[in-house]
Structures are given as structure tokens and as C-alpha cells.
Amino acid sequence: MCFLIIHTWKKEDFKVVGRKVIEAMPGAPKGSNMISSYVDSRLTGAWCIWDTENPEEVKKYLAKVVPEMHTADIIPILQFVPPGTDSYKIMHTLASL
Image (cartoon, rainbow, N blue to C red; front, side):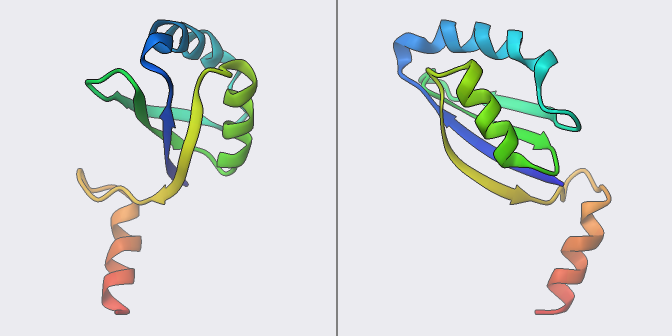
């Protein structure tokens, strides 16, 4: 399942956070993969899409290895465009409304 995990940090920590996140990726919890990451133009946060069954485990891991970065929110998401397997979940949800 995919999750949007929103992270924040102080602007002055941007370089440290970036370096630590890159170094931390090989040690991510088993079965957890970052699909994409988007950093805001103020350099104070990111929206990261993770494919994982346990987003709380990802949150705990990142808090340990990148203490300068704070997790603000974890949101389950479904892929809509481009169409993927989640499209069927969305159609089913819309049909049952």
C-alpha cells in the first residue's frame, strides 16, 4: 500500500537532512520503498510517497537516523494517474458512494 508521508525541518537543516536521508535509504525497513519525494521550494519540508505495509515503522526509522526531520502526517493514498492497480480501488469506492 502507498502512503504520503509529510516531513518538515528547519531551513538551516536542509543540507544535513538531505545528506542523511540519502545515506539512510539502503537501511529502510524491509519491504519499504520510497517511490518519490518532493521538496518544497522553501527547503523546509517534503512530501514522500512510500510503498510499505508499515508506515509507522518508516516513521520510527527516519526519526532515529534523521532526528532533524519531523514527520507531520502519514496519509494512505491510491494512485489515480497514471492508471495503476489502485484505479480499481478508486472506482469501487466511487461506485459505492
